[in-house]
Image 1 (spheres, rainbow, N blue to C red):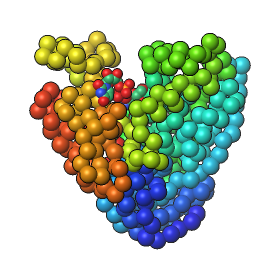
Image 2 (image 1 turned 90 degrees about the vertical axis):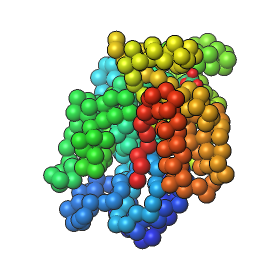
Image 3 (image 1 turned 45 degrees about the vertical axis):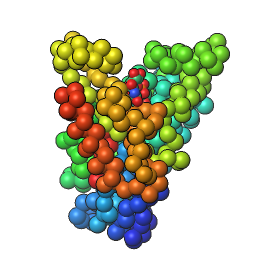
Image 4 (image 1 turned 30 degrees about the vertical axis):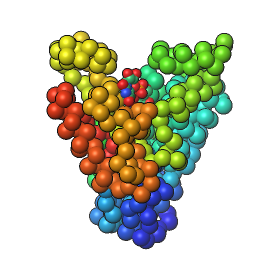
Amino acid sequence: MKTAHNVNLQPYNTFGFNAMAERLVRIENTSDLAQYFETEEPKPSLVLGGGSNLLLTRDLVGTVLKIEIPGFEVVAEDKDAVFVKVGAGYGWHDFVLKCIENNWAGVENLSLIPGNVGTAPMQNIGAYGVEIKDVFHELEAYIIGDRCFESFGLNDCNFGYRESVFKRKLKNEAVIASVTFKLAKTPKFNTSYGSIETELERMGVKDLNLRAVSDAVINIRQSKLPDPKQIGNSGSFFKNPEIPTSQYEQLQFAYPNIVGYKVSETTTKIAAGWLIEQAGFKGKRYGNYGVHDKQALVLVNYGGATGAQIFELSEEIIRAVSAKYGITLEREVNVV
Ligand code: EPU
């Protein structure tokens, strides 16, 4: 465990906002985690993973815990799958690359997602037709109130679209220490997401393999999502809203080009990027922050903007989309 005082969190959030932590404690293994909560009160003001889904709007008094627990270990294996236990502090994309190197399938569509393994289950990260729940086996979390570690299986996590029990009932109550994934020895490729097929064709791939799918996803992401190392952002800022299909059909009369995908008999998911673009915000720049010009769902800090400014912009977008379409956008990012 390492402690420092008055630390700027700028390098630790992908938006790159300046926000001071009164105290930063680095948790380097599971014993650190237990020791911290056994000896310290009150609760930390923030538990920080890769900082890739975080809108910091202020300086933080008290303690910020930075989870840096390492580890990558095959813990079991059967004829179809390997079970890999990964420390919460392991970088998500490094984990994906390691799976590809070993020819373990399941996470290739989730290539290049910023953030760490430990925070991935919190919002059930997803991209190109795959969500973490599809490869999830179990996780180990420290339950602050009970002062002990607990295992969570798939059903305990209540995974939904960018949702889990860790964002709801256990918000600020559980700190994820490790995640165990079930990866397939024989790939079941999921290239149904249209742009993957197109990109694989463009790349001239004849024999599908994990590396090719990963490279296709990387190319697609790089073509429309800004690299946080160059332009501060947190990926999709809002969730794609789910509305009753009847409401979607009414909107289709007025807006025949509206983009929606049926998720059940009664519910349709609307592309928030389309709503925001049509409301006139795509590529809009307000000095040192704005809306990305290739993906309207991504708000960006060109350098020197504050979280409060981006929050105010997100409020303006929510108001405009609601006024035009009667749909209330919900933020995907964690606002602190
Ligand atoms: N669209 C527009 N204008 C835009 C952006 C999108 O009209 O500026 C429309 C287009 O019709 C496009 C459709 O929206 O075809 C879908 O866009 P895209 O494929 O870029 O996906 P998305 O729904 O905007 C979601 C996830 C992403 C994930 C991609 C690919 C959410 C909130 N976002 O974005 O996840 O990478 O699908 O699967 O579900 C993230 O969560 O941070 C993230 C990047």
